[in-house]
Amino acid sequence: MGDTVKKGVFISFEGIEGSGKTIQALLLYEFLHKKGYTVVLTEEPGGTQIGLKIRELLLSVEHQEMTPVSELMLYNASRAQLIKEVIRPAIKKGAIVITDRFNDSTVAYQGYGRGIDLNLIDSIDRIVTAGLKPDITILLDLDVEVGMERNRGIHKADRLELEDRVFHKKVRNGYLEIAAKEPERIKLIDASKSIEEIHGKIVNIVSDLFLKI
Ligand code: TMP
Image 1 (tube, protein in one colour):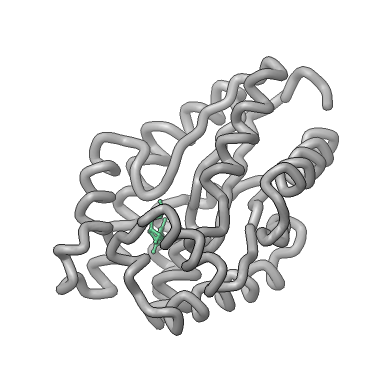
Image 2 (cartoon, rainbow, N blue to C red):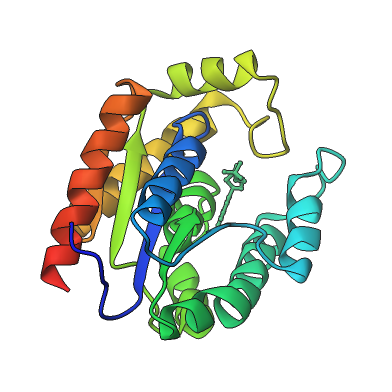
């Protein structure tokens, strides 16, 4: 891997609950940081003051009455802030931006999971992202039961995680459909493997990407 990236690079991590994307995003951040790159690690929803408040609204188990459309709007509002305040400025400065979730999450969860029309999601997305797309997306694919079991082990249960396995299966299938449509951008990884093995694969993928830019 070379030492300089000529322009900013944008990498997103995606996957169902318990797929290990948060740890993998952190490991990649640490790896690239140690190599001397300027790296920004962020997450969705969140990453800004407004985004963190929205995250709380979205994930609180108290808000069971939230409609799918409110949910869609709130994820997009958080994303609009993150793009404006964090992602675009960092890319402009030539940094590598790594985000734990981006707009594929909305297609998978609100589109395939909740059943909101994909064209509507796409229209809102075009306003919010104005064409900003990850250069590469790491999709950690895992059996829903295994993911849920992993989360149960760490007692993680927010409003979306409490949805039943039927919902999470729709989300997983959604991700697989998205990946099939964009194989160049979306790199599918078997998340049942060990943390080290997965990290090694991600490093190889990112190295290949750096050679191309
Ligand atoms: P996290 O647990 O990975 O931090 O993500 C928060 C939850 O929000 C997770 O259940 C996935 C969900 N989510 C959506 O439903 N739509 C979105 O657009 C995003 C970014 C996350």
